[in-house]
Image (cartoon, rainbow, N blue to C red; front, side):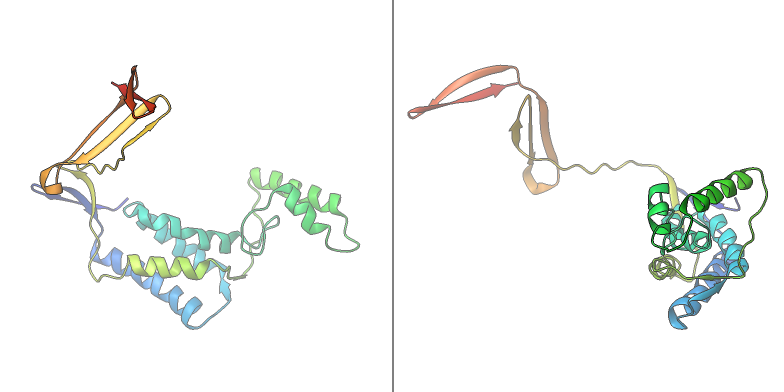
Length: 218
């Protein structure tokens, strides 16, 4: 996948990419940032976007944090197809029928059958006609902002894939609920934390004034 491994003694193993690959990905994001956000262009070229997304997907193999922010691009690239809403999300067949029923003199059953037939043809490998231009979806701007932030530094980011030490974060509370118990506390200095948990076993009655409470012992 074109990643570079960087062992750091006492820390762990990192992966990164070359400066050339990093700059190319950064330039792609900058170009779409200028076109969509700065110039507010709402009609975008399909083939150029498809090519650029192919390279960004390649980079995401090294940086998986990029992947969630591809959704706006995917919705944009597929929004022209049938059974898609205004934001590019795929609709259920029930939602698709409801939308078609809004149009007068429109044969809903015929349109649904045409949609299903198109899916079958697609599975057989017959390509659909792709448009030259596609209309931007609302989420696209937010995803471009996020990708711009991820590629904000001038040098390639390094991602830790295997460390020499393991850290564990824990949180807790003191509570007695149903069949189990839990308690947590901070030791002197507030650095180390102790905890105990388990199942209740033997109930003990401890009187307090006129009333009595049940105290459970592990």
